[in-house]
Length: 122
Length: 231
Length: 142
Image (cartoon, rainbow over all chains, first blue to last red; front, side, top):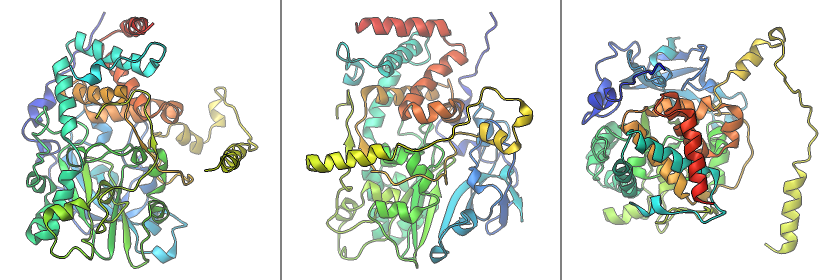
């Protein structure tokens, strides 16, 4: 029968004593966005897996922090670590996410992390 | 071998879950994917984790403004000062596979309250906070806290005025979060130990705030296990 | 709670389950009958529950089962030893399992099923070996 070989060593070689996501530092190239930028979450087709929650799609948010470089979860979920990208911490106004969010709490926010492929400039 | 591995279910009482767990572990060992010693070592590491280091991190931050600055800019470095190394404490020496190595400490202010959730699964900062509570893992908490945070917080006994911005942290990628609550009134002159005592696990998740005299999480029903882990 | 109050709460809990429902069973319909909104629903990532309406419940803690603890350790050690990474595990455990198992099987039930599945999918064991081992383990406790 045919048998696939899986490399069980690649992560331990890369990340031992370095940590994850530290081990991807420097691999993503220049970041497209900076702190303070207004961006919108793209509603890309995400057929089998995504860690960009549907409730964020199409909504506008502000870049709060450049947090780290890492392969996007959509690819890391198949052990593909070839194309790390920048991950951003972004902040939404709750009233922009939920139509019924009470006006009394108009200052409430939600923060989450999204990778660069999911964001576009507003 | 740990008691945990030897705990044999009684005749008639073994569940399909228990059968499968034993089968998977034995097959993995037979095929050389890991050793029984590996399993034991990781189990022993998990016995060392709990919420006390995170509580001490908060107490230290309350007492030392410079440390607080470090905590909110570099959570991994700050963790070292409470004896937690996110990279090398565990047998892998590259962090835990599930918790990674990017702690973010979220500072509450009198006008900003953080609360943490992982809507997609139940990501949690285990190396510094221990295992997640059952309610944190429920679809219910994960569905509702992002959209109706104030309602859910009120169910935990926490009501916040309109002037306070409630910020939900959806912990959906590689960062892991603890909340650095506002130091409460009535703690002037307290030692680090005294302060750490009132920073409960629920305060670090953000569903409670620290109060003088309150050193334990609220009592909730505990769903019993059929064959519980001994502690 | 007095026995009388217990009966009252039980009645409320059972009563609210009696609700009319219009089910639309599906037996592999023609694709032209499936609009894009339903295509998206059927192909949704089931773990993505943020914002779905739900009702207040009693928040509970839970004692951990021995098998749950061992399952957690097995999953982490499989990742330590490079059989998978945590993201592969999550994808399989929280999405690939599908809607019914996602909500039906219990939290650690999914971790466990997924650990068994990775061993077979990556050909470290055969499906038959898994069956034989489960059978053998079961017999030990008869």
